[in-house]
Amino acid sequence: TEISAGSSVTLSCQLYSYAGDSCDDWISSEGIQLFWVNQAGVKLTISDFRYQISAPGHCIITLTTTLLNEDDNR
Image: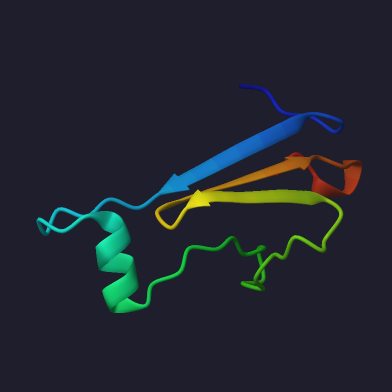
């Protein structure tokens, strides 16, 4: 897919557990949390107007953003 300024991009991340436990149980017992970070490693928050973050469950998280010119198509 070709991306450019003004385009909307959605990324999705899903955690799977192959240990025999459900992903939700594994996350609860291990204290794992899924979140998105920027290029500097800073956690993105829903208060940042550029990003729409949703987590319909403990094991999946999506990030939607509209690219700006200063993003340099990254």
